[in-house]
Length: 536
Image (cartoon, rainbow, N blue to C red; front, side):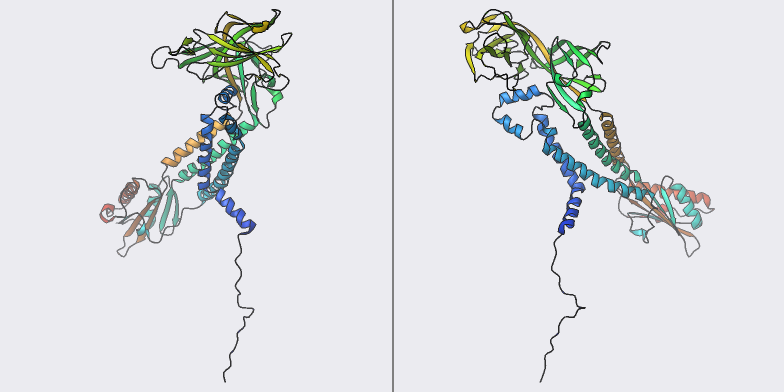
């Protein structure tokens, strides 16, 4: 009779355990490693560049509110959707800021540990001599009557500029640490550049203003048409300068295929650095800003401001000023504008106008502008009477006609012409044309740190491209015949042409030194040298 023995697992036997997931800590480590990898940093850098494309194609509020307003007029259906995606404020949008922040964290998490590792490597001894030097890309062997100690001492002199360390019967030498140092410097400089740009954004400000010829500007918060202060900018401590636009002159090409293109913009201004200060003059041009107390004032563009006189039904003058019109495009400077006359002593008046700098008829008999210069300025107006709706905030370039009555369209008006409004509502006179300039003031205290970081990045990149890390080992052992056998091996850590040629030159120099130390010449290294690989 046989019995079957049933074995039961003992406590010492390992029981299978169910597989566990990564857990919260594991997922956190995986996310951090992925975020701080160089691949992720490159992807984020690409996304940052890709996100900047709309900022260079579409007009930006931070540069010119007028151009954004013109874009809304030209694309009334598309512009609101673009605005919802912050495409008119790309560089201050939440999605661009998120990419910027992730790139900063990625670079910091990638570069800082790498810099620490490199600092430790610089202080460390050169690597020990490999047991089998014959496996290196370059190997040379020769014999000499000099002692092994003499060989290694002469090798140390030949390898001047290398970091050397002796290991028994061999010498290990390394050079080219600056390559990795340049790489680390490049990435640290990029990190510093991001910090400088962020600091400039937090502590600085950008502001846009429009000044008509003959008018002035004071650097105070209410004087700006649009201003974008940083989160930590004290708007009560703006530099107290003032400036006055004395004259503006725009030059255009008059002949040839390029007729109508801008040739020069020049604005003559008078400014004071503080109230009651000495007046100074400056010629403001594109890329030649005015610098006052850490603030740079740039010339962005220009336009036309037709001047009008409006009289009410009793003949009283109720409006007399130049009104900036926004140009539709820069080839003809056909411009649109709005005139609002709230104080008439009766019903309010409003006008929607089209200004033509050089008016002429096209082939179809329609009145158009043929040149951006004001050679034959004319204007047409549509008049409205009623409630302008000035109680609610509204754009100065738009007229709310919901509660207004149309009075009709004016004839084409040249300078000096007067249009008597229907229903004895008054009159409007086109009295002349002035020009205006659009300016941007920019205070960025981080400009010097940003420039320094950019310069260091270029220096680091140059070092990375031109420094070649190399390792050389020299082993000297006594042979059976009493002579010293010298073995020299070289390893170039980059795929650069000329590595083997350099190693061969070092071998030749070492052999030459040993020849002068010994009565008998050492065996020529070219006779017994063995080179693995080939010169690239």
